[in-house]
Amino acid sequence: MERGYFSEDLIQRVRQESDILEWVSRHVSLRKAGQNWVGLCPFHAEKTPSFTVSPGKQVYHCFGCGVGGDVIGFLMKIDGVGFPQAMTVLAERLGIPVLPQRTGEASHADHIREELYRIHRDAADYYHALLIESPEAQRARAYLQERGISDQTVKDFLLGYALPAWNGLQPFLAKKGWSDGQIEKAGLIIAKDQPVQAQKRYYDRFRNRIIFPIFDLQKRVIGFGGRVMDDGLPKYLNSPETPIFSKGNHLYALEKARESAGKCGYLVIVEGYFDAIAAHQAGIHAVAATLGTALTSNHLQRIHRFVQAVKLIFDPDEAGIRAALRTLDLIVPSSVSGEVVLLPAGEDPDSFIKRRGPEAFSRLLDQSAKLLDFAIQQGLMDPSAKTIEGKLKIVDQILPVIRKVTRPVERSYYLKHLAERLGLEERELAAEMARLGGVRTAVSNPPFESPLAKMPQEEQIILHLLVHNRVTDRTLIEPLEPEHFTEGRLRRIFNLYVESGIPAGGGALSNPVVQSEATDPQLAPILTALMVREPEYDDPEQTLRDCIRSLRVKRIRSEMKVLETEIRDAEKSGNGIQVKSLLDRLVGLKKMSLEVGK
Image (cartoon, rainbow, N blue to C red; front, side, top):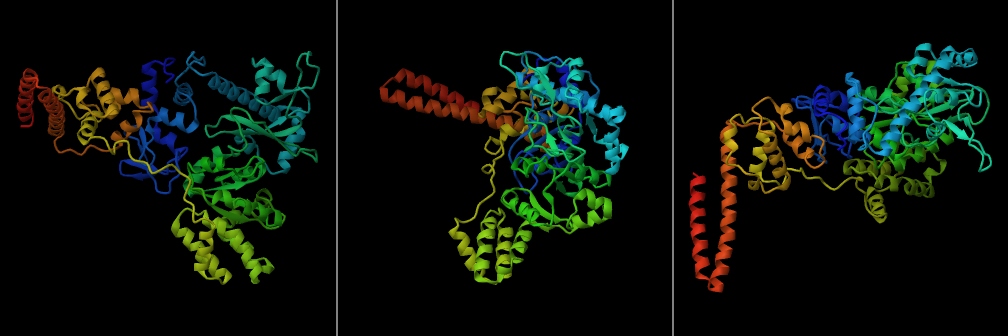
């Protein structure tokens, strides 16, 4: 853990003042369940919520895959960043000043990523200021007005304008202290072709274009899209792949769509920047756009964090239908269900909303069809579908997709549905599917067993009481030694309690071990599993005494078994003196066992 840069006081302040429910809700759709909140885990594929957040204890734990930790650990895992980055984000949100320098413990890669975020933000501010203020951007402002984009939307999406000049952005960023190498790494300038020995010269990647900043889920600028205002080519230009940006990983406006999508349960995916902007401006916020690429498995994994369904907008022409059908193999086996929305001929979401209004677009979304139902219907619309050859063609196209459906009930439904629509026997289709190799199950990790599942019950209960600070009389644990814990991680946690001093009351959040180890990858899953489980003991102190007594008796009996083996070995070797000594020790242990067990 790269903790050295931050004082323990600062770490504890950030941990205690941050609202874990708020941060988790940015990525996961949660519902109230008693004192906790539950939702689908963002770290593994599941259909039944097992991801639990405890606002009172400020921890999360998944009973499906075992991950758990505090708000700092959650940001580290969900964003794939190090401890310093997660701490900085949380501290800045709380208004706690954090110096921008990094210690030697911070990785070079993390340092590069941080630089790229800052360069992109500087560039976004530059482009936006040009659009708002520059006389040279008059044409761009008029173009956006013609497209129906309001001034407020321009501000909300931080839209910008790139000058026609070959080096408009570069000198601005240079004044900000960024080198040509850093700006090039961000993909904002391109090196000119020139002799090897010559000094590098650069030109701006984006010129004379409307600029669309692309944000990640933390609302950091990670890239740009640029659109021409005439018939120039390419019509759209995106940032290249960088350490912080990949078209196959990110969606435009997803950071704005996430909250609304989580509430309605689905995300609408469109193909263009203006399509997404038009929807948001019209009050339809659960909309994001791909970045010039087809939908990817990485997109679905990101989306699955907060919705269970996507609605894909396609044109009704042959190309649009083919594009919809191409998503079958991607979406059907995933944990995200897919639905298709077909627009009227000649319309895109932007033009449809402008012509017919947001209410008509919302009604269109309500009429979406399940992706697999849509595929079957499209196959039946082929004139040859009434012939045996046409039916076999549909079977060959659809059956392999049905085979990928992971839920048996859903798979059975579609098999029966396809048989009825084609006038075929369901058992024959089932046999045909079996010849394809049976059915596939969801791509997921092997069934997970709770980290506590096979751990000794008494050891769990003792630590459960300690984690929740239910032990007010510290003398009660004096008979307990680390060696009484047979499970290594539980022993390690108990050692930490002994070293830090056992707190008397105050709640789990005030517990020093919880505070210091909530981001440890080995201990956090165990600590959080203990924390989200409410302590329900009629008499906690008597429960503690009983568990300690049981552990001590087990330890004594274990030592007795070792002695009995040693006695047998000594008898075989004829060593009478050793036998007598060992027997005396065994008798003493038996007496001790009886006394402890009373």
